[in-house]
Every structure is written in C-alpha cells, then in structure tokens.
Amino acid sequence: MTVEEIFNKLASHMCEGIKFHDEMAKAYDYLNFEGLYKCHLYRAIEEKQGFLFLSHYYMTHYFKLLPLENMSESKLIPDTWYKYTT
Image (cartoon, rainbow, N blue to C red; front, side, top):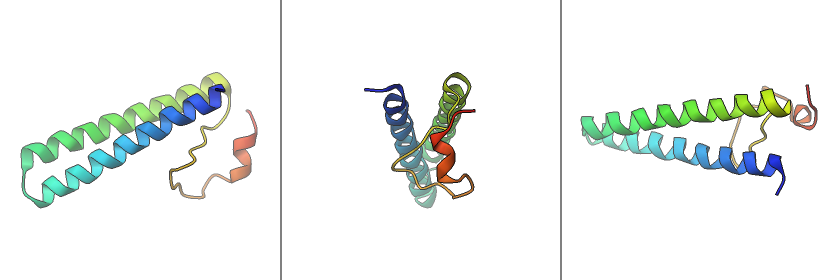
C-alpha cells in the first residue's frame, strides 16, 4: 500500500465521520434534543479540524494535494493539480 493510498483511506474515513456527525446533529436539532445536537455538532467540528490537519500534514510533508475519491468537492481546484508536487 502506498503512502498516498494510506492517506486517502484515512481522509475518506474522516470525511465519513464528518458527514455522519453532521447528519446526526441535524436530526437531533430537528427533534429538539439540544444536548445530543450539541454533542454531534462538536464531534463534527472536531472531525473537520482533524481532517484539515491531516490534509495540511500531507501537503507539507509530501508536497501534494490529498485526493479524495468518494468526496464531492467543488471544482475550484483543477483535477490536473493532483498529479504534481509543489
């Protein structure tokens, strides 16, 4: 398994966590369970912060953008940039 595959797997797992906690926070907010809403909202923020740290680490140590296969991203960054190092 290459370094890129390992980081991609970690990032994908983190993105799933972000989505899960975000959806749970919305559901609990809808049901008016304020405590559980805040708990999942906090976890979603922590997951996002961890993902940003992982992405920054990958860019600063391997000089590449971290590609995400199963995450829908805006097309602000062209796909061709993922092939190159800085």
